[in-house]
Figure 1: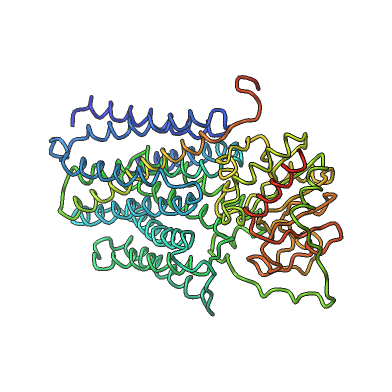
Figure 2: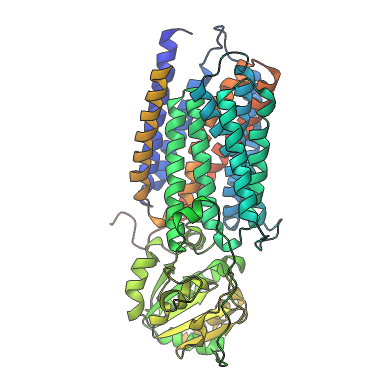
Length: 467
Length: 99
């Protein structure tokens, strides 16, 4: 390869790296975020163009036919994956983590078998093992997560005795084989082990995970995918890959930390995959407590008379596809001069930011969507807190009851509002199987029914009142 | 080779710190598009796959490389499309042009 060409390629990679960093930098605000996508696209185009200029070690051009077939097939698969419904974004994200991890693993395997005849250094073998192990477990783990989110697989966590022991031994076994391979890179027969064992580990890791833990799990898999790409960068000696992998890895890491804090799980708990344990639910209180219920008409009367309303959406809103009806409610109340805000818990929904995307899709302005701290400052001055399909994130027991399994988890202080209204199908407890004392408070009204239908009824009642 | 490794570690360390600082500033509003964007950027692994498939050292390398290109390209294309679709939906209630 001529030096001039090498320098040109390296400069293209340098520009791509800078554009990738800018791309994430512009994501800091919704105003500049779309520029971030454009920067990423240009960076990606430059990087691919630079790569196509590469020469084979013999100095010839690359075989473009396979590359073009791959790029074309990728576009054919990628376009529909980019056009899925917004409600399918969590499973699409999980699926793309699987694709990314597959790419990294496949390249790692091919690299090993084409280099093994020559010399593979200890460090190269070490990062190669890291790449393949992380890639394999992320591949099956993400496929499992996508399957659960798409509801092809049962959503309920499946637990069995000694699950952690099995998982940790699988992990330990792959690390042990990896260490042996680092010392003896020529043992080709052992290499499939560090692919196969992590593949099984990835499946077992996600089996005990329930829906409510998905935001943490998806973030963690995101981080693993990034780290495996960075390891691939070390193997191929590509600084561009190291940078992109490190950016993705740190992004997933930060999101995992935010999610685990929002669920009050320690970070070690998350790192070792020991999440999703369903604690035995606390025995329900002895005395029979009664909840008050209300009709759409009564709810509309209270909402129409309020001056400040906070709506708290949860996964139930997404399941019922109620976001467009919620938007009608927002419009109707805003027209009456009611100040309507939304309180978004970090783990509401199935992935980080899930609720924000659904509400933005329904055309609710983003400056009305407030996160935990901001909305908690507002709630004591709020007339009505309307909870739609959220449960554990509003449970006051997490704040007040030291014996509660979710004690310490930061919650939305909806009980501090003057009136609390909860749209819910029935009194059944939420995902964690924990009773919610919020429903028995004197100023709580239960609105039993399907979220979409009930919100629709409230909107209609509000409309009648206006005429 | 030793120097390359060290340079790589420096690059990784610096990029990780930049990643932390930049991503800490991302509004929680945009966490979903952030994840789909980093996903698309992470598919830069396609450069490794292109070289693998293009050099065609062994049949195994060509086959795995080509499939890897397909997987990565679909992440690039799908990731950018969906990120842009999501970001287009985020609108402010304040009139455009005013802060």
